[in-house]
Length: 265
Image (cartoon, rainbow, N blue to C red; front, side):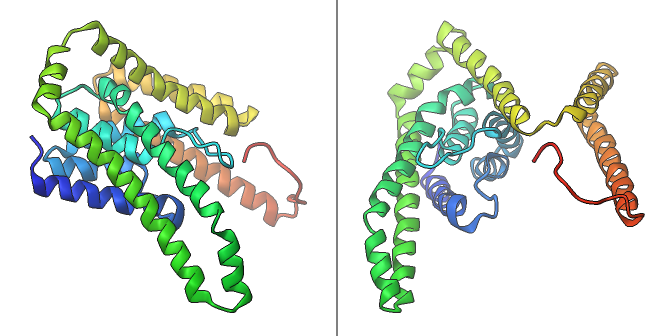
């Protein structure tokens, strides 16, 4: 059950994350950050971290291109955490159940951009009149509007799952084919998201390191290390990155780095 204070805190966090996504740009809006925060508000940081990490992988390769916006990671990540903690869904099912609310967030972004495009002439007028305060007010209006849209989408989601009829319906789906489908979709989406990122960023000379990391994670996991195995693999990756960086710096200092283009981003 979500109390009134918890609901208010979730809406405040959503409002701040909405502004951060396009203005603060401090990565507070990322699901890996929002998941544990919302989980702490609801009293389950561990589940919040698990959901946030999974949702981060799902959206890591989804980038907006102009007016084309992917399902919003802010609303989707927050609602996935709420589903997992408040409704007791497993992580994969929570990811799938949160997609409709992520789409609401996407529509909120598109609507905000559409409304603000009509105000650009007003911004030009303020600039021509040397009125920076007027431009500031337009920006504050856009920030507040987007935060309001995101908060309303989250509010609709929280109210829906706290409704007794909806809660009984969700509980009745335990073991049902619907939950199985949501779980399968949610489990698949994180790998699809990471594959999209790899398709964009992975250079040809990095495939060997990728497969080595995968094999190392599998070996350490088979030894019963579980979660710590990922940390150990990350340390190995950091060591390789530092070694490669130092080698390239040494080559550059020796006069071997004449510049030019390289693979990747």
